[in-house]
Structure formats: C-alpha cells, structure tokens
Image: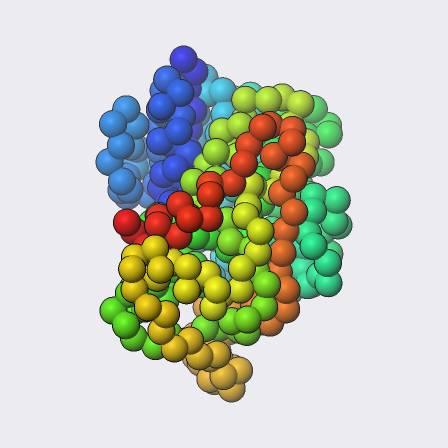
Length: 305
C-alpha cells in the first residue's frame, strides 16, 4: 500500500480516488472545503492546494500527486491556474511524488485531423495557451530531473457526475424530461466523448508505470459520435425517445459573452463544436492494455442509470 494525494473531487478526481482505494492504497483528497463524494477508505482534507507549504505537508511520503482540479469559472483560468500549478510543481519537487495531471485537448488548438499524442501544442487562445504552458513547464522540470511528471488528456467528458461541466451532459436532464435542448455548436459533427471513469483509469495506470513519465497520453475513448447521435444513444439507454436538438445561434453566444466571461470563453473556443473533434487513443490502449468503457455503458452512466 502506498499513499496517493488527489487534488480535486470532481468526477475525474472521484473516479481516480475510488480506483486507488480499490487497489489497496491510502488515498487523500484535497479541496478547499473538504467536500466531495464520501468514499469508503478516502480521507478528505480541507486545504488550499495553491499553498505549497500546506500541500507539501499533506503530500509528504506520497507516491503520486494527482492534479484533478477543474476551476469552476471557465473564463478566469488566468487567475486560478498560475498559483495552483506553481504549488503543484513545487510540491512534486519537494516530496518526490510523481505529478499526474488530468488535462484537456485545448493545448492542441484547432486541428483538421484526428488528434494523437504526437501533435504539437500550438493553441493561440487563452485557455489553450494556459494548458500548453502548464505541460511545457512540467516537462521542462521533468527533463531536468527535478520532478517526475505525466499528463493524461481527454476529450469532452461523459459518464457519471459530469453534469453542467460537459457539453453533452449539461443537456441530459432536460432531454430526459422530453424537453428540446440547445447545443453550443454543430450537433452533427463527429466528436469524441471520454468517460470520466476512463480518465481515472488512465491516471492510475500511468502513475504506476515510470516509463510513462515525461509524456502526454490520451485517455481511452470510444469511436466518435455526433452530439445528436450521442444524445439519442443516452436517451435510448434510459428508454426515452430522442428530443429536438437545436444549435444555439452564434449571435446569442456573442451577446451573452459581453456580460459573462465564461460564455465569452466558450465562444472563443467554439471551434471545438463547429468541426470534427476526434481523438485516437490507441497508444495508451496498446501500451497499458486499457480499453474504453463500452459505449453502451458510457450512455447508461451518462443517463445516471
């Protein structure tokens, strides 16, 4: 049994903590309030992970430190991530714990091909640059031998507990009630959806394999489905008929962005939903023997069945 510290108790942090406990490890989750799902065998600590001294105190003796934090305000990452990321890096260096990060595809920026780990990080918009810069800094320290770091990237989340944090899942409650839903982007473009359970499984897998360090890995993900197809499948899993799905007009998004920083940032990154957004996760599947949760199971979990 070894000690593992998970920063963040959202759906990915919860799945990672659950898997680590099942593997027999000592698990601590860290959030500002000490909140999050109550899991047998998990110690919850209320602490500010942006405080490197406090986080180092908690993580001393840990085999791995998991960055599963997800700032709640999409439009203010530049205010949250620098201090939090600095603290995570300093803690990893001070304790020797491997830094295992859950991340997104934003660092790649707009692409016109299937995404793999070999693509360069060339994002030009704010949040993509932030994510790219975070990994670049971790990789630099890793290459210098000061820390051990690895990153797992995933496409849009599906599965249990995602709720309003997912482009698909935020519409599921209304759809289950038979109400029409509005989608931010083109609902008929091919799109990859990654179950948060599979993100957690990937994090735990790479944390246990030193040869995985110093690299980016894409979490196991099923073949793409458009948002319309995915919603149809989720509703079918719940024995509900498909509902009307409308595209949210760009004018509405731009108007809302004038007064809401989160919506403004969504508008800037709407390319994610206006073009094919597809990943190939075969590298991690081959290297670690992982496979995505069967799509039927993802749909049941997304419908909260």
